[in-house]
Length: 378
Image (cartoon, rainbow, N blue to C red; front, top):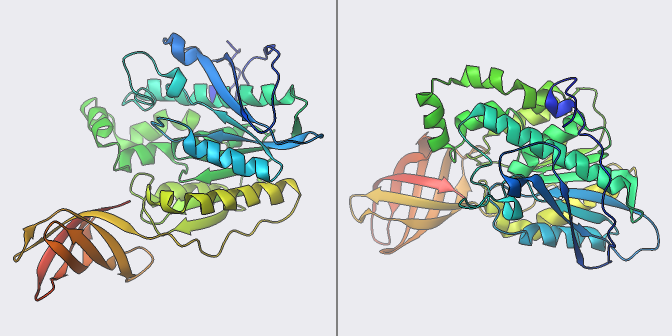
């Protein structure tokens, strides 16, 4: 255990010797080392990484890749690693605490990573940051990688861990956040995915203000400097309710140099354009490592898909999937959606009343009637 001389997230983990391993080009290589942060679960103490090395006679830049919360596999991360290899960049995918091979017996991948207990949450996040920093220690021992050009990319929970690590780890030369931000306490208090956890916190007399104070030690904005000049890139979802807009905005304010690309989706809709997103991120790292200024795509078309429950006097309550064909503004306060339902197609045109609920008219094949819509943007 490291001697804590400042908040744990900012204290480097102790150095360790790493077992020798041979890495092969153009194939996944697995390696593991002990986590520097102690947890009560033996499975969680073994940090597993997956290294991808391009075929090169010289040391290559490398990007550490962090997955999303609850990941059942690493298919998307592997696709991204292969795209980086095609650009002559190495990739090291790190399994986050309580996920995949680090999942304790009797639980699901990621189930124990986000708990409605601030002390446990802090321990998990500190462990994740320390594991990334120890992964960098390992990279520095490898002749295949150029340790002067290390990038970090994370998705969702991995992006939040990435923001924390980027804030305290100067060896990271460029950072990309995919669907993740900052202001962790407010995200927990606002996220549509954390309703159960939030109710437990409330029952235990936690408030948003108390949570903000308790989680200060792991809040990226407490460590990021407005003078930070390292390249940073944010891919955000315009209609995200899992990582709210305030979280994205907090990270952008903390990193004024950060470039941003907005997707016209919710938190999950980016899967439709996953390959395009990965190409964009690979180009960001390629240009950043070369010392070039990166300009994000002006637009990466991604359809706005909804899972919804339209209600009207003619067809009653229906459940369907819809595609937005018009929006009143960038925030999507007013919109028109074509739905496919068990009773056939119907269109809804309306304005948001509250988060998830809109009022307007339903257009049926032979009639237009007043309607309501509860929906969730993918």
